[in-house]
Each structure stands twice: as structure tokens, then as C-alpha cells.
Image (cartoon, rainbow, N blue to C red; front, top):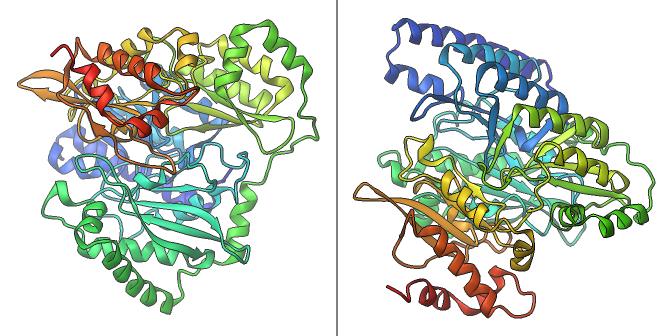
Length: 552
């Protein structure tokens, strides 16, 4: 994984020192909250319903075990002993005292971490595939380009005050696990007819109040021109993006209003000017330097056949269930990708206690080359585990309530913190997610249902990506009463699409029964082993709507 150079160390330490002074001025009353707000946002500090929240950057979702232990230590010392992993592969602490945040930033800097550009109208943390470097069919490790983008975008003088926040994601396999089409810019690693690696670029995706799937703006950008092309997109957005209306300020609105062809024309004009200067050509030697930080671990030469693991699967149903749902194929024989669920029955999706963080760090040290990944689905991942070690890994995870066998199943939900924490939310998300997981906790039922993604947001800002859930749930306020609107048929992968609104919203007391009814409608009408999204695409919304509202 990437290690800080002297420039990284210098800029992070300078920012910590600067923010310490700003916090002191706020606590003394020298700075009013309105004056302090833009300063704290530049350092990942939000003011939520009950306290400040600190958002910690985890670039492209990759952590060392040392860094994860530091997060555990910080959460014990300065918070309530847990953290919340987010859909941007970051970690949020929900209860830090403002006076302690400079000390937290100091401790983060000691393990090469920070909170820079995790908020504000700038380029946020670039996200990627949590299976990066281990996924079959991968053209190159996407984290290399993510790191290039991180270095280019950090403190970029032109893009520190964009019309609105800006998010980039990178994927390098045909199956998109990074949701690139719902980002402001999505980068897909591709190979041309000559066998050269380049980048397909998508622009103008995003969820929130106006959900839009991104448009492909370029089929192939050569590696040396990628930063110049990204800079050209950002410059067009900075020039023409709206600043007079908060709800129309994202790049998706600009692309929608002028059209992708005009957007492409404007970008190409800017691209010509940027290229003339030659300062943003990405040298091969720089890419190679960064590539070394993502060199493959010391994989052993192993057989893919593991009869001892097969025998344990036959003997232990709990282990067999976990193997079925939480293990993904690795590109190297004898290895597997372990997806660690942070969605135990009845608890908060994405939450991870300090003890659990320490446990995962220990497991990573022993079995996974001391590396941990964060998935945008709010889970963790051990990307390089020997198949022969899977039973021991499962036992170690199970001892810490981290072996819930629900990867990709109905209880593996994405959910924002909702009205329990967020001052923007209209409704609570966490209690609904907990009740859904309790309703469908039977593992045999979950496996019968098959792959089904439930995404929930407590407000229209869509932090829970509800628009692109197979089943999406949106919290809305109806005359002071929490209700939940349901969408069906969304997807965030390479077939990305915004789900369809089914009909009138449901009350807090009705919503779990409504989800149950949707699921059982699907089970009645599906063909063979058809998964939910395929059934929905075949039959449409009508059968679900009829069953949902039949009694009304």
C-alpha cells in the first residue's frame, strides 16, 4: 500500500497545526460557529444532531493493520468505542469532543492518515473496488490510478472551492464493484484493440435529490493524458457549474442541461489547451513508482483443491453458509477473498467496535498480509487469504460477531445513520434496517431469496444509495410523521439504473411488512433460480404494486 513521502508528511502536519489554532479560537469565542464552519469542513468535521462528527479518509478503502489498530485506539480514547464505515470507504466517529479533534488528527498523522477533503466543495476521497489487486479479470490494480488522482487533487488550488462536492471512482474489471456510473466522474480501466491499457471516462452521475446515471464521455483516454482529461472536466464544471442554486450545483445537472455531446465538446476544447502546456502528462516512471507500492504480496504456489476445507464445509453448516455467501474467487490458485460482514442481526449496518477493529487487524496480520479493505457496501474485506486458512479465519471472525453469513443477501443492507445522528435526515434508518435484518434473519430463507440489495437513506441526500438498491427505502417527512418511500429495480453496477417508485409511502409500522410482501411476491413469480433484479427486469413494477396496495 502507498506510503507517505516527505510532501505528504509536511502538508498533513501543517494542516494539523493550523486546525489546532482554529479550534482554540472557536473554543475561546474568537470565532463564531458561522466563521468556523468552513474551516472545520475542510478538516472533515461536521456538526450533527447531538455532537460533532469526524470523517476520516481511507484512500481507495485500503488500510494496514497498523492503521486499523490506531482507529480502534482513537475510537476508545476519544469516542464511544466504535466507528461507522461509510459508502465512501471512510470511517466516521460520531461523538468526538471538539477540543479533542486536533489530538485525533495528530494521532492519525502518526500512521499516515488524515481527514483532509472528506467534506466541503472539493474532490473527495477517490473510491475503488475493494477486491483490487485480487480480482479475476482485472486489467490492472485500480488503486494505482486512485493514488495518482489523490496526489493530483489534494489541495489543488483550482478545485478547492468547486460549485459543489465532487466524487470520483475507479474500476478495473467488467463487473463494477465501485459504482462508477453514479459518481461525478467514473473511470473504467479498459484495453484497446492494440492491447494498450487506457481509461473509459463517465461523467455526470450522482444520486441525491436528482438521481442521474453518468454518461460516457470518452471511450479511451491514454494513461499519460488521464490527469489532463480529468482536469479538463473539472475546469469545465468550475466555469459553468451553477453556484446560485444548491440543488442545481452538481456536475450531473450541468451535463443534463447542456447534454453530453456539448459537455464532451467543451471538455475537448479545454483538453487541447491543457495538453499544450504539457505539465499534466503523466510520466510512465511516476506510474511505475506508485505501482511498486501496490506490488502483489508474497503469494505461495498452492493448489486450488482443499479437501480439508471441503470436509469442514460438509461437517459444519455455519461454516458452509459463510463460505457460500462471504467468499469470493481470487485470481491466484489456492487463495480466496474474504468479505467480512458488518451487518449482524439487529445491529447497525456499518458499525464496527474498537475490539472488532483490533480483531480484524490481528486476523489480517496472521492470515492476510496485514492489509484490510473497506467496501462501499459498508463491510470490510481481507483480499488475500489462503484457502487452507479459511476455517481458522472464520472461527476468529465468529468469536467477534464478524462472521454473519449474509454477503450480498437481504440483510447485507446499506444504510445511512439517519435521524438518530444526522440533522439533515427526515426519518430514522437504523431501526428500520435492524427490524429488516431481524425479520429475515433465517439463513435458509436468505439463501432461498438469493442476491438482493436493500439500500436505505434517511433523506433525499441519498447517503444510503437508496436509488440504486434492488429495493430502495427513502425516509420522508409527512406532516411531522416519519414515512418510507419504496423504489424497486435499481442497480449500481455495470447495469446501473435508478429504481422505480412503487407508490405511496409507508409508515414506520408498515415498512417492514411491505418489504416482506415485496420479497414474497418475488419468490412467487421468479423463474428457477432467477435473482430479484432479473425477475424485476422481466416483469416490471406492476405485480409488486398490486400486492403491496391490494388491501388499500
